[in-house]
Amino acid sequence: MNVNLEYYKIFYHVAQCQSITGAAGELCISQPAVSQAIKQLEQSLGTKLFMRTAKGVTLTNEGQTLFSYVKNGYEQIQLGEQKLQEMLNMKTGEIRIGASDMTLQFYLLPYLRKYHQMYPDIKVTVTNAPTPETIEHLQAGRIDFGIVSQPFEAESHLRVLPVRDIQDVFIAGSKFWNYKKQMMRYEDLKHLPIICLESDTSTRRYVDAFLAENQVKLEPEFELATSDMIVQFALQNLGIGCVVQDFAQAYIEKDALFLLQFDKQIPKRQICVVNDDRLPLSVAAGKLMELLQQEYLI
Image (cartoon, rainbow, N blue to C red; front, side, top):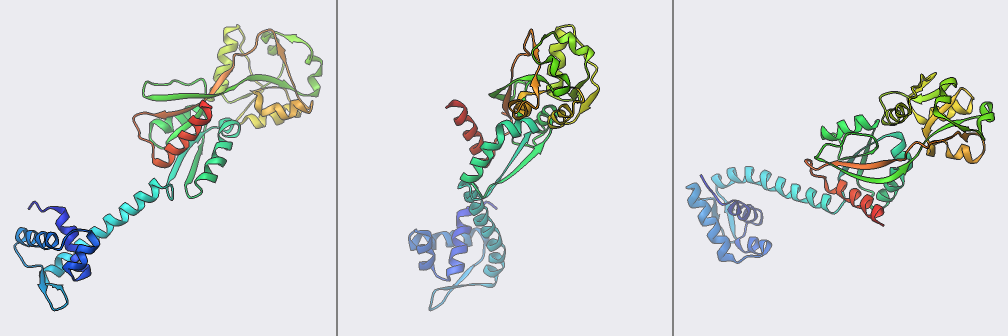
């Protein structure tokens, strides 16, 4: 049976209003158009749906049975339209972001604060993980986009927007003060206690690759899960820490830590916003992406 769904919409309003005239007013169409739609629906279904009364119309037994189902379906459609409009108006919704400690702290956090001020009703979920895991979450559709640090493998379907430079450095505390004004070579690090991130992070892989190009392979005394902990270990003079400079900058400015100087600087790398072109962004996620891109372009 192929029935025009518009007829059911008109049927619903006539049943609710118990009036052809009332339904026509609600739907902003003519009374004859309402009457014709009901006639067409009755012919398609092979039964009378309404009886005329002195005050308007009332449902027949068959009409009441049909209405009990149409009412639920039509009101669910109305509710769906309402929820969709709320999403489009940024009154409800959710964004799912993947970020590491570093990209969250030194790039994303100020944008999340601004976004929350603009759209306080949007739920924000941040999955905290290193870059390789964030890329995996993105490709599996568990997050809308990721804020990651180079290096990472960007397949053709990943859109990558570089947004901020970062610098990898070696830091030390007061125990190693005699190295402060020395110009060092990376092979000198072989004779010093080294504190690094764990080997499954993009930062560790990047630094290891650079040192390998300079014929240096380090055997760290400490391998830690976070850069913040590397800074704390360095403050306790447990070794030479390898971190992105932002993590140590406050302590460097207070002379609690210092940067080791080398004859060749580790090349800067970048924090990037990454999304998968195969997966459409939600309205809420799209608004945050617009904010990130606007700030970047400015």
